[in-house]
Amino acid sequence: MSVIDQATIEQAHASLRSKDKVLKGLIEKHGALSIPDSGDSFTALVNIIIGQQLSGKVATVIQKRLGGLLRNTTYCPDAIQGLSGSSLRDIGISKLKTEYILSLAATVIKNREYFSRFEFMQDSEIENTLVRNRGVGVWSARIFLLFHLRRANIYPQGDASLNKAIEELYSVSGSELERLIDSWSPYRTFACLHLWRYIDEK
Image (tube, rainbow, N blue to C red; front, side):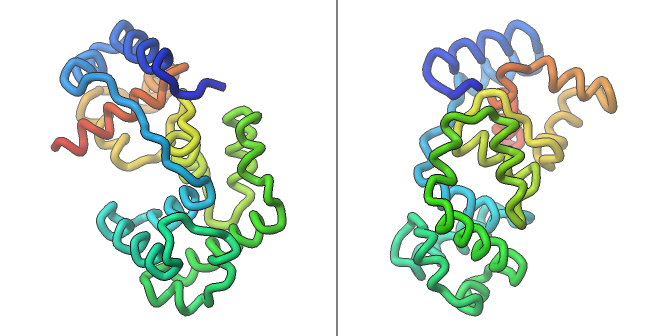
């Protein structure tokens, strides 16, 4: 388990620069990248569910509407459970995502230590725990690990932007692609940050 701190940021960028010419160029262009603290765990996971298969702009609008509905940008599971399904759908959350969010709220209310125990768990254990929730697949679990828990060695398999960046920057596929991703370990998170920045800048 490796959580991002200043020493990890420095080690990660030095490691990636030394082993990957493409990432070396991106790091020289972007400088060192890291991830700010994203606050409350329940809020972070609900926002990930809301953002599934939506553009960033649309997801942000819906998240702001939910914050307005709750009168707080931090979502309380008890407050979420107090909302009707129709009120969530009225702000743009789909029927299925409404079910997922209400189910997650019920899980956290039943087990108030649900998120706090993650601090002591390995990445794979957390992923396996998260995907037991309806609406939380492997991609969502890894995005949570990467952006919220700030774990240093996460690669969200199947991410469309990462796929596009790799397609444009590397001539690899199949087993070669797997070897490439493995070569970034134990700092795959930072490789992802630079590949996402590459796509964003385009």
